[in-house]
Length: 288
Image (tube, rainbow, N blue to C red; front, side):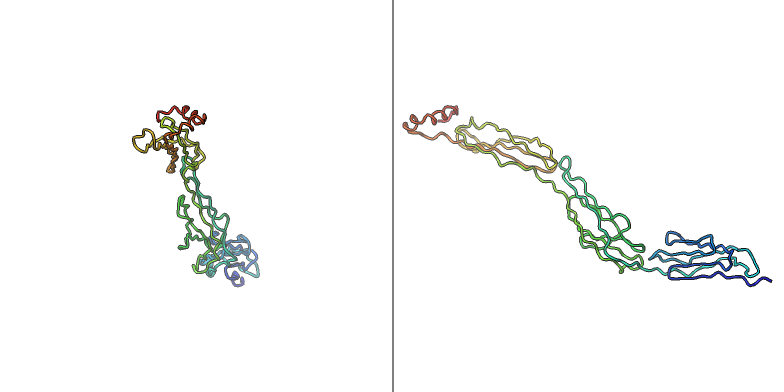
């Protein structure tokens, strides 16, 4: 008569289970989802399952194939189940890495382009926990924030939260801030001005070269001519105005002529100052 059927040995240690066949020829197979743990030794006389931290595992089944019968052991043949693995939270050693930011800027046609928020690379949180994001002091979420290309500014922090205990969290990362680009209006030189003795000399000037925020040269529109008084004969002002536009940006530049009639000169001033006479005649003025 054979001895009683040998029973496999089941050793448990927290979230680690080892099943050893009762007989030397027994072949142990552990059945568990490898996504929640690691199995070593399957197909041998002793196999071990180690669960990942923070993973709630149900009962792990095992099977033992019959070994060779001998005078001391009738091998076990059948299957059993281990106790459930109690999930635990990982130990947090500090704050996780924060997101990476690329800010938007003035692009072609003076339109805002670019801008992105990228999650930290690798595994910023230990097994059994999940990375969370906070924007501008609001609630925590597992959803990566979306970059706001124009405004408002976003202050972003990250932390790790235990999968089975929402109150068990890591330290928070140092905030990083988005700096959305702006579309600056074209930068212009100071308006031009001159005083002339006659309206005929208030000729159209050449407008300056101006660059847009994307670095391109802007071709201005204009000029718009404004006289003051509206019917200008001798004295008053004439203003030439150009508008520089790119996308939604715009600036205006003006050149203002002040027309003043030549003053009355005494005979002594007139005949004793040749420069005065020359400047008067060279103006070709129709005003006297």
